[in-house]
Image (cartoon, rainbow, N blue to C red):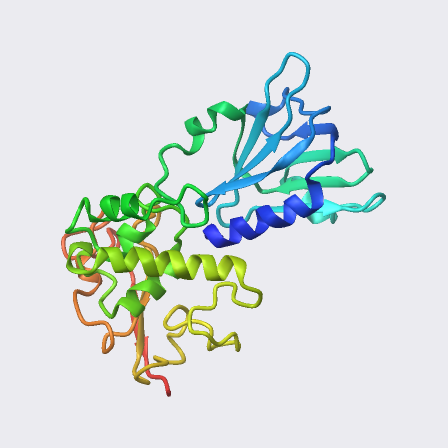
Length: 300
């Protein structure tokens, strides 16, 4: 799933492509918005809150400024095509939004989720539940610390994945931050230095979003296979100690228990049996028997 830095970079790209242009034709291909029309509105810019994209549009006669809300989830994307270009036929069934611009370019929203259109002064209705976001100008680290620490027994990775506590961190960052903190992903969040955790999270997310060549590189090396400490390294081993990296499967439909990687040697503490959630039996097991974890030996 795209993380907060992914959506922030998308917003900057869409700003370069669309800001200042007027929509001359719109086609919403989702039932709830099928009769809505944003033709005649200028694209004022894009903002993000966590993983949510906000496309701001100008007012028209008798209609206030509007915000188009979308979420990429696992498979969404935006495509801007030059005049005369067509989207590949295999993608056409997945188009949820088409915007024609005043320079004859066409914008397609592909597999977009949670599409909504609201007056800009009501954006809070859509994203007001989200926690502070390090990539926003209104970033409030003290509030992020307060929210993360509110449930001190919650497993660290589950707390980091909760967008209501701190918006923008996804599974990659949760796994990598647990490693850099030096504890098991299921260590109670109250057992770690939450202030330091928030500071490190914000620094890494901003670095990933704004520094050329640093996108989602957590180790300082962008070489393929060396860019993450633990995520995806179950066949390569730990970059720090050379020992095995373990991985446990996600709990289907449970956003707090995603697929998790960790180094048991470098990250002491509870194992996946400490997971909590509605889809789990006591001891952290998924409700239906399945092979949920494995380890493999790797070299330094």
